[in-house]
Image (cartoon, rainbow, N blue to C red; front, top):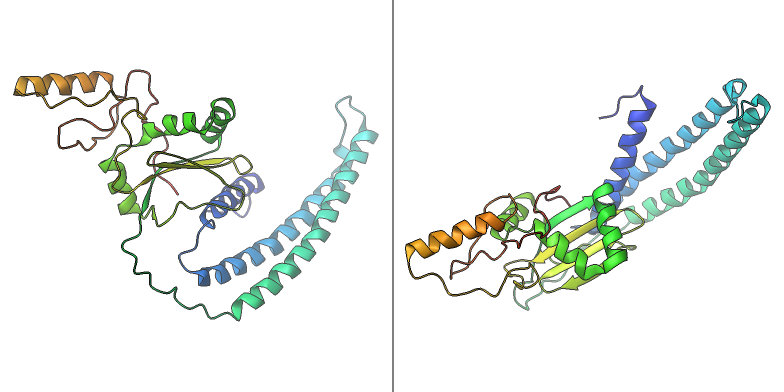
Length: 278
C-alpha cells in the first residue's frame, strides 16, 4: 500500500508493481481488458510526470548542499543543476507519451470486442506453472542459461516440480494456460514436457509443464524405473531410499508402478524456492 509520505518506500512499491504489470500483461483473458489497463497507465504517466518535476525541483532547491566526492561545492551544484535539467527533459518527453497513450485509449474505447469463434478440434492442451522467479533468484538462472544453456536451466528448475501437487496448486490458483504466456521480449525454450520462458531485460524466469504429462525421468535425474517390489518390505525399503535422496518438500504423486516420478538424485536442484506465481 502507498504511504503518501515516504518517497523511498513508494518508489520501491511502484517499481515492483510495474514489474508485476509487465509480466501480467503478457496475456489477456479478454482483449476488452486492455482498455481499463490503458486508463490506469495514463493516470500513472501523469503522476510520473509530476514526480519528475518534483525530483528536478529537489535538486535545484538543495543545490547549495551538493558537493562532489572531493568536497567541491561548485562542482556538486553544477551536477545538481544538470540532473534537474535532464529530469525536466524526461518530463517533456512524457508529455508525448501521455498524448499517444490518451489517443490509443480513445481508439480502444471505440472497439466492441466479440467472443472468439469456438474451436471444435478437441480439448486444448493446457500448461501449468511450475515456478516463477524474479530478482536475484532469476539472475542466478539467467547466469546459468548464459553459461550452460537452456537445457541446464530447465533441469535446474524442474526441481520445483512436485507432479500432482504442483498441478493441483496451479489449478487452485488459476495458473493454467492454453499456451505458455510470453511477452514481446521473452525468450522461449522447450525440453520434453517443459517450456522455459525468460527475459534478461526484465529479469524474470518461468517454467511451465504440460498438464497431465509426466516428464522424462532422465530429465529429472531419475534412473530408469524398475518393477515394483514384490514384498511389503521391498516397498518400505524403496520408500526409505527415496526419503534419503530427495530434497525436503511436499508430497508428490506416484505412478502405477509405485515409482516416484519426481524424486531427485543426490545433488539435484533443490525443490525449495519461491513457489508458484504468475
